[in-house]
Length: 165
Image 1 (cartoon, rainbow, N blue to C red):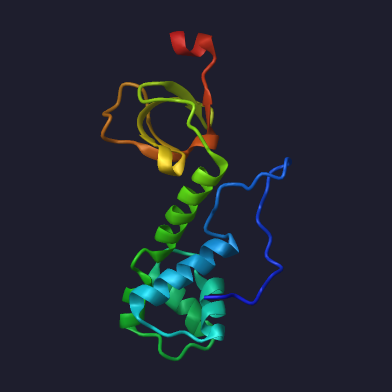
Image 2: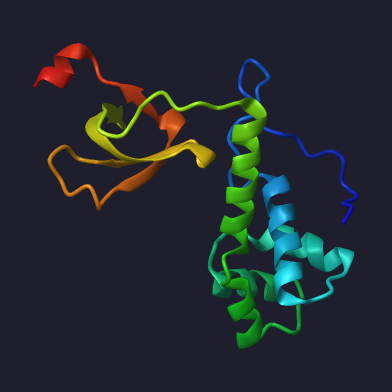
């Protein structure tokens, strides 16, 4: 499938390195539309695809359907809502994040059991997701089956004094 727009920018850091894909990136939304079209079996027009790219702000089929209805889609019904609820946005983001990790050769700095800082708070890494450059974190001393998944770039090392406390 070929898209007509060529003015879409890829977000980069100050060094020109592509940043981690996020759901507001147009290329993520376009891939999500492709996955939606393939999984739903719907044949969308170019205008329908563009409408869907604009409307997939949420991972909630009902909210997406409401936005499409505001854009003039007349076949918005419970069946469409169900199709829009199938996780194609998350699937696109995961797929493109894996490609980003491979293309940039992103390597994780920490391992399970390491104490790190996340949003100013000491946490323990209980799970590592190398394909997505993410960590599963929990508060020290808590059950390792309960964790929050965060991007590797949001985690930093604790200072030596913090580790001893």
